[in-house]
Image (cartoon, rainbow, N blue to C red; front, side, top):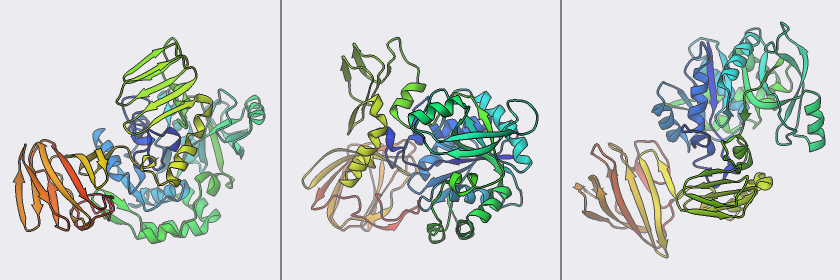
Length: 475
């Protein structure tokens, strides 16, 4: 049996402004109708003898991950990392989860943000790799390169393993870091492979290697897993124990040190979609080399990626550029500089600007809200609550709220009273009064919230009860 381990953490900063810290690229439909997470799960399902996946994600993304998994059916174990510690601890926790009921399956480790154009080639490579993993090898998949890429690490092949066939695999001679262009050209000529970050190995074998090379990490992960607790459909690892884990990638912790590393060459139209330029390269372009999404008008435009999320975007006389419009930010960059978008995100974070973290529309387990206007001492939001969903029982110390229902009906707790507010009706929540909003109906509840007060930050909240187990964050 093979269990996919889907790594769904990460923030995808190079794909800002579509990808944000609280809504990263793996949760977006960037290369098709499905999100990248959904496409990864569906691709793994094509492998024979595959089981339901283990998905590792963060606290902030857990409800969106669960909703996307629910939309494509099937079941999954969802492990919540209390904080980021890179891929080795995440995979170790998943290995413990996979062995929890006494089994010792093969683990197919897949980042949730990769694109693979040829799923059949991927499936064939996994089947070939499973033979090596069954024999105790720790298998990685090396992408057959199509250019001298400086943005990826490389793998040098050693001697061939097993039968004389391309699928048999090779010993790993060495892993090498991202090269300069001259070295990348040399690697290309010498048959090196790109390091994909995808792996296949037996759970117990990986844990044994981890215990040898990273004993402290092994102890911390085991402690965090032992301290786990069930939270709805999620498994929360112990925060205190997991926080003591060294932060290391699976490559650094194990693969570059083990004597059992093997590599399967894989030619499948792979991309990690690490930049807007990479997304342009894998997309379907028109006769002028453009990829145009949304409401776009283009004249004398060539080899560009233009994405309009809402407004009309008109582009004239532009070549080799990326232009991305969202409700609260616009990116214009030359494709050659696409990797430097990460520096913009770092600047936004340094200036504590919300555009690095949130979209204008923010998703919560109960629905979503969108800020549509704000000024000194006021803010206006459009709120949508899913049928049967409820915000937390809470109060604010610095703001009052006016709620106007525009669609559906709201069950409102306002101090000691609980009552219904129907369409075209409103209610007022004074400063400091305990309140709650619930949608008792079977259609989405839509309402407008007008906040007024001396401080309107999302951290002005005291929670008394929350069905989603959240702490001091927006209701």
